Length: 316
Image 1: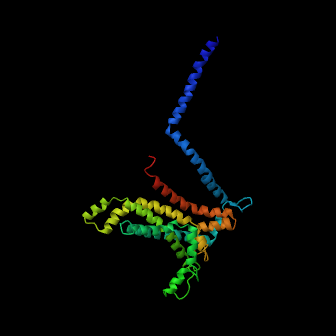
Image 2: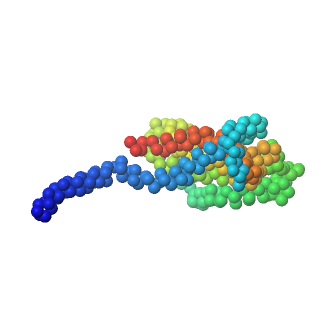
């Protein structure tokens, strides 16, 4: 009887166990399931450090929130306060001017330096080393050094100009609204141009030399080679580098904060520095988040273009 019971039970259990094993094997062999399993830790981390803070900042921008105090819902009052202030529109304008000037000059200088360094010359490695030093200097250190260079009375720049007889009186490079924005852009260009040069130099080295040789055989000039070979071949590099640099430049608060702190008379104030002032110095976290939310759509467009460019032809 016991044997019969045992025999009767085994047929019902074995198929169930085999079915479970088969399902598990199918799941493990499914690439989509494996992809989700491997992506799960990254998705959890992104949710904690990106998604949650982002939506928290959106919610915070609709509240009157002081550091250490409970939040009070205001609706769109923070945004109304910002756009009712004429100075805020000036800050938006400053941000565009600062970013476009800095990125444009870095692009032109970086391309020119890359074209020069792409040809083999004696001591070329020394030129490259010296050129890339500004990229290795931390932003805070660079800003403090340039703050001393721009100093009205003890700064190196005014001393040099005096010695050359180019000026008769000191120039307040960061205190005069006619020079302040240009002075900051010059520092940003000095610090960021090596990134352009390095990226463009790598792109130039990847262009096959046979294309230039064929163009010379056909009688093409240097300009025609540059316009018809170099520019089309470098277009993907141009797009990625420019997008990255635009994001980094427009969100960098160090140079403006340490050189002018937005002055004089808001002549150099930009959106990231204004958000820093509201949120950390004035402890008005709500309106500080609102400033960032005004800035976010601009960055979102850049990020979307950058992501599409970097991820195209993948995962197909």
